[in-house]
Figure: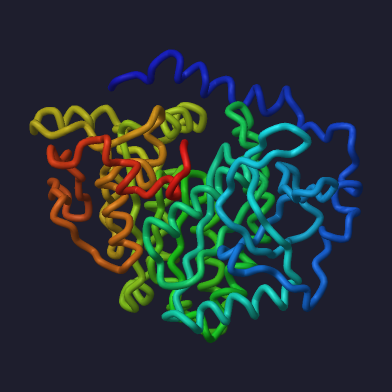
Length: 397
């Protein structure tokens, strides 16, 4: 069985130590000072320029309202906040260039009313995006805005932002904050699923976000008055940092239970053997991740070699589950965001958002539930940014 690279293993081993040795830095400002300004407390009926701020957010991050431009910090907030935002961009603040997200808070009732108005104007569909590890509000809002542009989604886009630290060596802190946020997220998802005007929720999670999404959907299934939560039907897990064996054990009994699959619920998981972030997570946790087809069992790897098959091991076949392997078209330094970086993966992702379940680029494997995206010589890597619509017109990376 191949061993992880030494540098990657060292990084993985450093993660828990970094999390223990370096506490969260509160700095010289008390949390109460961050939110003392009235702009941090949305008033009912306050007007928001929704044309300039077309996207929706829900966050448990602590805001900083001390400066002209409100920003969301990496600290845990004192409450859940709602608001609108637009794609982040460079702005001059006190003579310095800062990458900031234009945003405005809304009172909860106004936010829900705005979401309903936008949903009613479209097809009753909502796309909910949940980010993963090592993210700031700026990086996640950039990704959410890219998803909106790339997919042309026919409904509102909602970003749920929890207090990831946005730092390489803060994995343990991120994991802690993610679990701390489980209650917040599942209550929000339940409230969204129970709205009668929400006909379909497309849930997209990235990386560590899968560990918020899957238990929350199971919770909504158990507690929503509709009993089957049938409007949560299309679930996309991109590079899921989720214990593969735990997923196999539990998923068929809750989120992909027979009755829910019969009502057309589906999970699509994008996985890559080239994903260095999940290789580090595997080394840290000691068990394989759902998003990486690494062969943890040496006997299974030997059997695949003997059959002349690639050494790639996946979650077991479960009705309602499709695995899309992006290993051969992986992009970026870590291979951890192919659904936003690789042209073929982006095209596949867009079709999944639209409810399509097949593409000509998908190549069958020896497993019926696993499909591989093969390189296309007509699709050179220079087209990745254009096809994935990474940057708004006129912007530079």
